[in-house]
Length: 399
Image 1 (cartoon, one colour):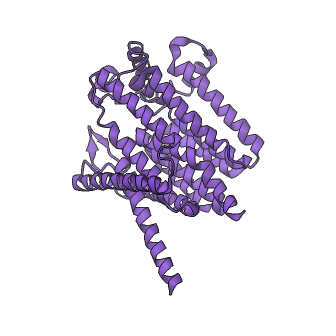
Image 2 (spheres, helix red, strand yellow):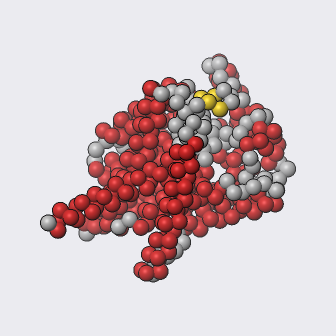
Image 3 (cartoon, helix red, strand yellow):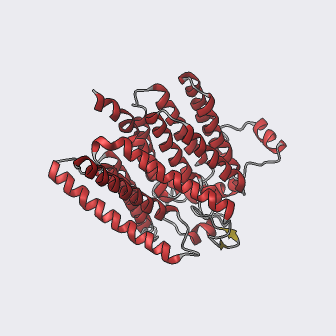
């Protein structure tokens, strides 16, 4: 009878944890405010309740067991947030919209910490299933209820974003988690299915960058089995990102002015603007040049549209943090990412380490063309921070 009761309690706890993650992540991505405002309000209220509850429980746990209250992740996240707040105040912009981004990111972190330490394999499975479910739900909406979320300025709204180019914000953490789960279980069927749904979702809506990037990851998982080839692929993509950034994002520097690149692209009928992105980057660089150190803080939609050729963001993650926090903000963000990658690189298994690094590199490759909401950038970095722990806990428990 005791074992039966224990299994029921654990089962209820797992279900509760699943819905907790679902509310936090859903509140960060679901675009229900246009057609279902009551549902939108409910998710936001519940996400705030979850944050306050998880924070209180985290404080109690730290005091009771004399645990460290702040991790490196917390310190860097709060440092970046504090700098964006300072920059916003100095420039007369409101920083309030950044608060939910940090709250939801920390909610995920606190819930992770609060879950029983010897059940980390299960918590990865639960969090992975939440992200996967949202990806499938979005795909279902695309296929059968394409207009149910409504329209904004004549453009279709999707379940998880107002623009299909933003799908990667949810897809990439889902893929990262599913790969970790596949390492833990040894089964790749659900991972392959997730890849297929992700590729189909972005291909249906016509997101060329996301389609190519996620398809590249799928082909890598299926065909690249050796550590050496993974390493070569990662180095190649990194070099490509650097070449692209200094050729197209910062064309004024003319560091990599390679004529055949432009000729090749023009021959394909693509000028690499992807909806005039190069023009937006030039406008962004012009604005950054007037406040290179502190940036402009958290800018609203109208500010971007007025100063960035009617765009609502910079369409490049580096320019995004430069325009918000200047060189100082970008430096903090770079350190944030660096330490996350450093944690990932300490994974013992070479293949696991290199494949997860491939996902990280592809995430930032996609971020050269699109700016995801800070919530999902922070969550993705958090997954980098805990990747080693998630892949070594099983070995430690068996020692």
